[in-house]
Length: 355
Image (cartoon, rainbow, N blue to C red):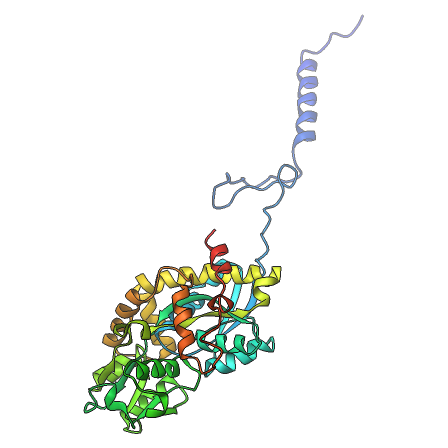
């Protein structure tokens, strides 16, 4: 007689089978609940997607740019540095003040610098003497510099025999003084032209009575006006005598010829053009730069300076040959008047930057 199968056997077998399957699939320890991925913290899977790559910082090309003087025409350079507009075009620009355009051209000639912001007259004199400095951009194609004198001197003719302060010989203030005197039929020797060493020094010399007159641009000219001094000459009203490349971008000829240097020059022009637009349109940014670099605190002087240059600055850095042609009249070199003006400037970088 065979034993009768227990009715518990099927249940036992089923239980063992189910228990075996469950123990094989279950982890050794219970897992913590897994949060659903969000945009702030996306779920990452090394098997399905690579880790997010961090783009390495762009290597900026370091460029030191000497400039002179510390006055309103330098606002675009200062703005370009402070607002990081040069970095936008791959350049890390350090603006370095140098007292006088002549030392700047000498340093360019030796290769210490490649590009600078200074007056065009010394670049032309360098060129006449076999140098390789070119004017490659111009944002002050006329004089913003005027003559301010003691109140009793009321005309340019009244400056005969008087002392006139300029920052340095060969500076834009020096060329402005020569042009001003010539407009009244006077020669440079008809007055006593003296070097003061800088724009602030010129203003101080006027205020202290050491000079009968000085050549100043905004903002320092507005400080002279506030102190009661007289504006003997308004260069912008002297016709061709006011037409002069007072401040612009000058460079070694290698910047035009060498592909790497030319690329730097084009990017510099792009950034400077943007900064020039800011200097013409954004009062607050411009006043901040003037306050920082020119050490001007007076709000009225700062606003007047912005208002002046917002109208004075051109829309483009492109060089008008008329400014160069007229410049040749005031250079202390007999070869200047007969020289071809095209030898002294090149619009190639500006044109490339606009493309």
